[in-house]
Amino acid sequence: MKLLVEFWSILESSSFSVFELEESLDINFLPKSLPWRENQVKELAVLFKPLLFRQSETINVVVQGPPGSGKTATVKRFGEDLSSYARERGVRLFFSHLNARKHKTLYLMLSEVAKQLNASIPNRGLSTQEMFKKVYEHLERKNAHLIFAIDEFDYFARTNPEDDVMFLTRYYDELRYETKRVSFVFILKELSSIVEVKDQITSVIDFPPYTSKELFDILADRVKNEKAFKEGAVEEEAVKLIADTYGADKGGSGNARLAIEALRLAGKIADAEGAPVVVADHAKRAISKVSPELSIVGEALKVLNLHELLLLKTVINLQKEDSINMYPIGVVEERYGLLAKELGEEPRKHTQVYEYVVRMKLLGLFSTAQSGKGVKGRTTIVSLAFPATPEIEKMVEQRIKELKQ
Image 1 (tube, helix red, strand yellow):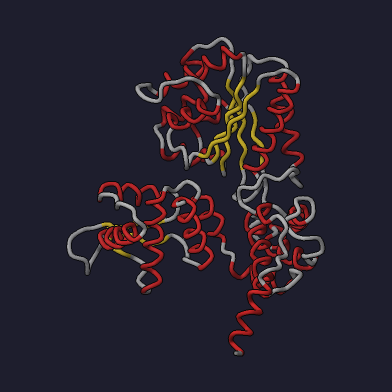
Image 2 (image 1 turned 135 degrees about the vertical axis):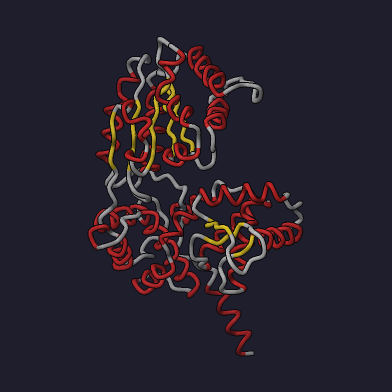
């Protein structure tokens, strides 16, 4: 009887939540305002203002800063607001934001841009240059300009031919268009890693890591203005503890993504306990569970297909079973095949699995090495590139569930 009462009390407590709009804490959420990034928005506005008055101009801007410094959110918020402002004044200005980890090649990027522009373009049989010409001709017909933001451009530069990287900033020289209709925003960690485009850049905008005061304001904005929590459901002390933990001036990373994730997790802990308010103790326990890898993995999961996710889940499962943490690709492939069949999926062949492993290494999810002593023959050894915390495992399982629906 006592167990039944305890079980019932858990169900009762779960009916209340401290959250109002939990999606306001999602990694993909785009807030209405951007505390402490107003200066960067102004810089972007000054640089791109000429496009509102004359279309024959190209502007190439680099946005650089560490993970979680607000680069993506700022560029997306600016791009969407600018294109809306332009439309109200009768100016055709399109904005497109793509992540290089998802759209891995220039051809795939241009195909997606064409789709967003509703341009009638054959999806096969064209070279990259021909695809660009089709996009440009569509803009020409519409008398329009495109601001093309490429996120994680440093990843694109590492994994694509140098000719494609150079083409993005020198296409007017190669194709000799008189009217310039495409501008770029290259979002990356450090410009020094992209030597190919330095001399073609109009301006560089820096995004430093956030201080504790800045993080406090960002978290407070999510709590109040974006209504992530019910009114009065978060103590200020809890917000301050998280901000102080991650603030760059207090020895933290300055990563807003991690701070926001810690706040979300603190709310989850409060809900699990049936607590009506998120307090400092909830925040402290949440911080202990949030790892720097959480942000990296969260970004990577968005661009993985179902079978890549199953491969990741397989290696996580293997690690949970023993402490070796390094597995021959044959073992990984066998276990992946079993997991795929359990979920009603046809396992991919060896060549495809190997390509998945290579891609996931580039994404920072796997580490690989060649087998040494103790392993018969030579084979690829696969291991996780991050600690397999319960939070990360849950994220992987949730993403698999979403793609299976």
